[in-house]
Image (cartoon, rainbow, N blue to C red; front, side):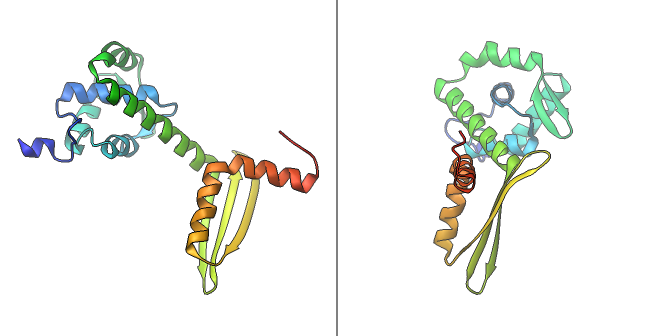
Length: 181
């Protein structure tokens, strides 16, 4: 019995029907389709399912048409969304909130990684960190800074992740002498 709960926390699931519901609910909360690894990362981070049951549930959902897979990414089909909506009350409120918050945070992470890049180089004097913002067609900003220590490097990376839009706007305003909002 203990093997069935391997990697699953006290609030997690081992029943295949519940796991399918959890997957449908999570995918219905996400703005973008997710890879199998991304879905499991979210569920594993919260200790909701183990990989064996997760894989089995996702395969069954795909086979029965509740979830579709396109280019290695999964999204809910109409039937999966309806199941999640109809049965969501069977999930505890704290689990629903946990999944919705995790989906939102993951969407933010995906969007940041899609349009932003942080590259780090190390030399004998410290670190160079290059922070970039781009869209599909053009690199909007690329700035490279030297920082002498790792603590400062981590601060620069953290602040860029948290406030890249404000940083970009401030640089544009400073360089143009105009106030763009």
